[in-house]
Length: 73
Image (cartoon, rainbow, N blue to C red):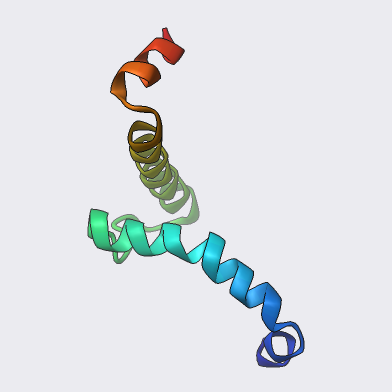
């Protein structure tokens, strides 16, 4: 991994700019530092619910509640 990062540092910079922000927000804002469930299926479900909450929060911040409700209805 270290060799690949050193060979292509621009890829890591792009990843930090795009992906790491989401995980940092989930950890700090939601206080989500570890999984509460055990087992792949349960962890997958737990992560899916957390990402859904993150995406809804982003949609509300970007569009506003009224616009989001109008788009759903």
